[in-house]
Image 1: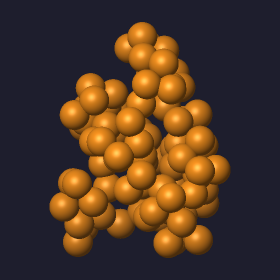
Image 2: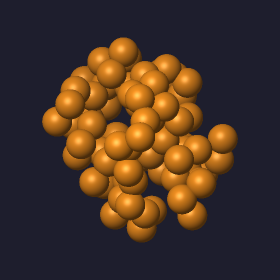
Image 3: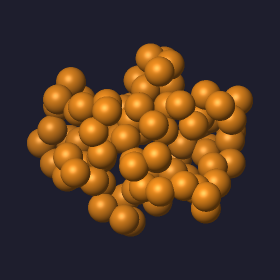
Image 4: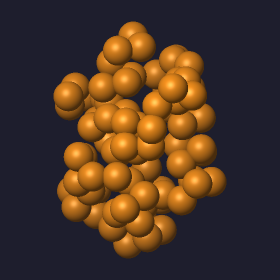
Length: 83
């Protein structure tokens, strides 16, 4: 996992984390963001749009199941593979 990409994703989530009262250091990188209560379907789509803008990639999840793209670790890998 690319630590730089992970840190940038956490930065994109910072406002959401503050709203929820969650410290960025408490976010598990290998656990679903949904299961951690950090995102719901709408905020996840907002995160994806932010990721696409930030990393200048186009993410296509049509052939994937949620466990393949719903954690910091899995998103990091996808972004890294797209670059």
